[in-house]
Amino acid sequence: MALLITDQCINCDVCEPACPNDAIYMGPEIYEINPSRCTECVGHFEEPQCQVVCPVSCIELNPDWVESREALEAKVQALGTLVATKSDN
Ligand code: SF4
Ligand code: SF4
Image (cartoon, rainbow, N blue to C red; front, top):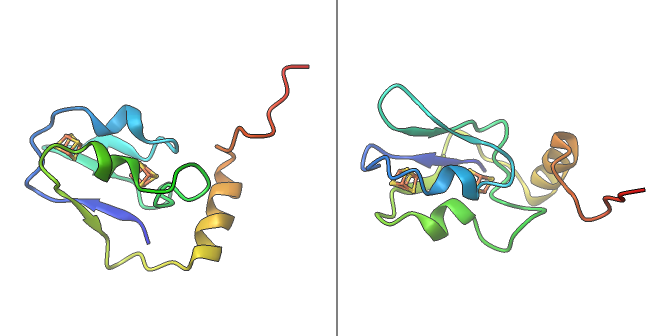
């Protein structure tokens, strides 16, 4: 399931750099989450980092994007944002 930023957002800019999948961007009025890139932080962190850092707790689950854990793991693989096996050679 992707996450969703509600209209309680105060545009504090904190969540955008916290997202490991570059799923958060500034929309016409408030920050928004691209559900195609949000994995609930699966593959990167134990908890959704945007929810952890948001000072006004305005980030919720998006009921229109229900996905299983397996689907989220496949999604992060497809995004190619995992860096655990990265080699500098
Ligand atoms: S839950 Fe994680 S991947 Fe999804 S928008 Fe928040 S920080 Fe990004
Ligand atoms: S951290 Fe919360 S209040 Fe700040 S920009 Fe993100 S969603 Fe909006």
